[in-house]
Structure formats: structure tokens, C-alpha cells
Length: 625
Image (tube, rainbow, N blue to C red; front, side, top):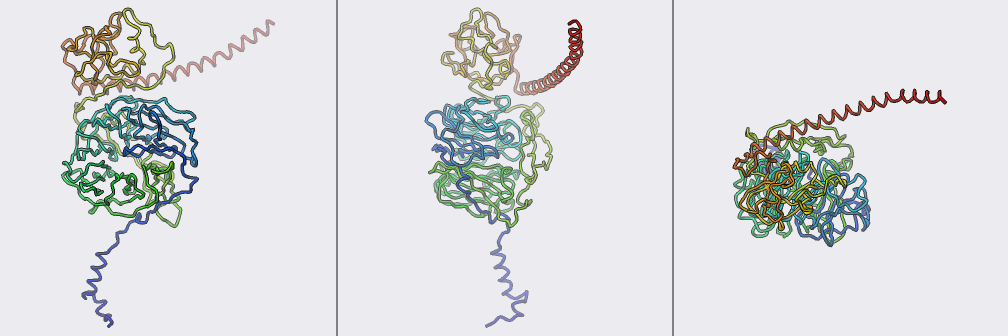
């Protein structure tokens, strides 16, 4: 029986209403990234014969940028990683030089987002080191670091560079602390000790004013790094299991994405709103696999990629501002499991192939690194603005000192078409540092002496002992003068014998005490004058007792030592003095540059004046002959 045309086309008929409701119920959400697919290159574009580390740590073990590919390798003693030019694909020579300066296994590596030749590494030896890779790659093993950062008491598991400020690095150790470093000055800015257990992940927001952490105590925290305090915190999540879980900031939306295992060993994802951290906005189950899900967020396309350690697939979701906030797109499945993934910055993707993301897959069962390109299918190879919005450039928005002083600024973006800068973000003051006194909630803490690794020429520092000084006590004078002006970091709690005192490069952290009593509180001041009896310290007895931990303190003058009952300056005064010194240093640098310029001008004038005089002398000599 046929349906009458009038009944079928009638807008008030029940058939048309059912048809309309059926279409609304099964309406397909439109998305330009729905058909993203993965592409595996030919074998000659892969990297073979690389002994990838077998460590079970849950970091990526790989870092990549448009110039270099770095991967942590398996070594017999100490720790090393391989760093080769990106174009050196194919079979890698087993004798390829490594970066091998750590005393323990390397746990994480990250390239500087503003300098492709700078890479940082963290290790089980409790240190973070910064390395400089030559432009044409390594010719010999690199063991000379640029900066060596000591501050953690246990192994350092994760590091993250600041997204907008230059030379700011964040590290998380298994001592439950996160340390914020000023790499330029080789000193800590702040120590965040708000965690009660192991930190599993760290993630900066888009302008670097906050960062999120996931912790073993089952709490998600959003932390203000300059004030070293928690800005937002979730309650204990009882539905979380005991495995490691990860958190990622979703750009500048004020939301955080987490991936975790539930109590029933199901893998789930959740989206949190910073304005209300009492419960997640959305929770979605993935599967019941046992591997840890590692999230990779592309803030340009708003796509979240999920890859599990030991899995052979990569899922991707589109993040939306409206409920349900996450939309499953597709998954890319391969036959081999992955140990980790390195992510190429967006500026290194190939726009002619419509490549929106490129991973470097570390095979778990082979000595192979395989590039995986995520491609949006398009008929034309011309530049598509809809899938390539302006992305983060290599230009830092702020210097380290500007960011530390309280300024915040968004990322400087560049066009993927020709590389020109597309914006000029405004500078704003962070809410956490709007106090007039610029006070810190906690003083930085460090337990070892840190220094910039710059070798000094022989004979530049006298090694002859003073009167009454033994040869063993002259090591402290080998510190470069520029480093003696770095602020000392200490606490006044522990006192140990100087023979058992930890040292860095053979340099005692504290001077000997004159009386040998552990009840006297003293601070080493490098600016104190030397004398034949004190040797520039507070005392001269080598068998005395001294304390180890140090607190951030300005050098003391001889007229106002700590032990004469003077009240020490508070943190606000220290901070003001610190930034005042920075201004004086910058002005002195400008004066020095002007004087150097004037010296060069005078040298040129002298050389010009010497020419006619030399000619006259030559003429006279010829006439006499």
C-alpha cells in the first residue's frame, strides 16, 4: 500500500514528525578532522639500529624538533641519550656519538622550544642538565654540559620548559617536590612542596602562569609557580586506581584533561573545570587495558591524542567547549606496540601533505623509530587556513627576569604559510604576584652547590694557601668570581661534620666554624673580606662542625653578620634587593657595551692616524738611502 503524497508531504502528519525526530536523533556532528588517518613512511625514512632504553618509567624517552631527534638509549653504566640530525634517517651507526654526562639512567629529555640546539635531561642521579648540540650534530661523545642543576634529593622523573618565558624550566622529582629553575642564572626560582606523594605528570597552561600536576595521592592540583602555592585542588578521587595517571591543560580554556585507571582497572578520561574542582565535568570510559594512557594535546586543532605504553593504537578525540566536551573521532591501529612517542612541534609539520601532527614511535620490540604522520585528507595540496591556524613560534614572549617579576604574556604566534608573526600579545600582571611587596610564600631550598660549567684557564686562580691555611682548604677559591656572587641557598636545621659534608666538584658547601660548636648559627658570605686567619670564611678550623642545607640569602657585609643578633631581612626585602641588583647589572652591561664601542672607534682612529706617519717614515728612510 502506497502512502498518499498529501500525507507524506503534509507538515502536520505523524510520519513527517517521526522522520524529523529520527534525523535529529541520528544527526552526524560535522567536523573537518573526522577523517584524520595515520600514514607510515617507507623504511628508508625510519631510524633503525637504535638501542632504545628498556626502562619502565612512564615518560616518552624521545624528543624531536625540526633539526634533531633525541632518544634515551640502553647503556651499561651511567646514563646517555642519542641526538642525531633529523635528516639522518636509515640505519644508524652503532658508533654514533652520545650525550653521556649523567651518572644515572636518563628518565626524561626535552628540547628548548625557543632554541632547537638546546636540550635538557633529567636522571636518576638527582640532577637536571642542559646541553648544547652543535649545528651539524655531534662528532664525538658530549660530556660537557652547559648548566648542571642540583636541588632534588631523589631521582628527577619529569621536566618541562616554560611555553612563553625564555630559560625557565620546571622539574619534578621523586622527593615529592617540583623545582622551578632559572637556567640562565643556574639557580632555583621556587620550590613547590605541596605534594604528599609522587608526582606523575606536569603541564603548563598556554601563557605559563599556571601548571597542573597529577599525584599519587589521587589529587589534581593547579599550582601558581611564582607564589609556590596551590591555586585550585580537587578532592581525593576515590574512583582512581593505584597506577600512574596524567593531566594536560587544554590551552587557555581554563580546563584540564586527565587520563587514569579506575578502581576496577578500567581506563577512563575526564575533563575538569578550574572554577569548580569538586567533580569532573565529564568522565568517559575507554577500555580495560592495563597500560598507562599518555595524552598529547594539539592546541591549534583542539585534538587530543591518546596512546598507551605497550598499545599498538592511537585514539584521537576532538575537544569542544560545550557538553559533552569530548568527541571520539577515530583510531590509528598498527601491528607493533609502542614504548613511547616523540611529538614534532607544529612548525615542523608538512603543510603540503596536510599533516596536522607527527609522532615518532619508539617500537617496544624492535630497535626502530618510526615517524607517524596524522593527515587530514584534502584533494588539493595548497595551504589550507582552516586546518592550519597560527601556531607557536620560536620567539619567547618574555625573558626569565620579566616572568619572575610577575609579568604574563601569551604566546607569539606565526603563520604556517610563510612564518611571519601574526600577533602581538599584551603583557599583564599575574594575579598571584600583584602584592606590592612582591613577597614569596616560600624561600627556595637547595641542598648542593650549583654552577655553570665554564672551564677556567690554568693559573687564573691562585692555589697557594694563605698563612694558616691547609692546601685542602683552598678548593673554595677555585669557584669563578661570577659564581661567588650567586645567592646562597640554605636552611639552619642540620649540622654535620665537614668530613661527611656533601660536596660539589670538591667544593664544601659551608665554611668551617671557628668554635666547632653546632649551636652557633652561621651563614657563609662570599663577599666577606679575606684575612690570613679567617681565609674569607667565618672561621678557619678544618675539624669544626657546619650545617649543610642552605636558604636563599644575600651576601652579608662585615658590619652586619647574622650572629650579632641582627634580625635577618624578610623575603619581600630579599626579593626587592634581588630585582634591584638585576637592574644594576643590566645598566652595567649597557655601560660596558658603550665603552667597548668607544674603544673600537678609538682603535680605528689610531690606525687611520698611523698610516700617514708610517708613509712619512718610509719616505725619509728612502731619501737617506
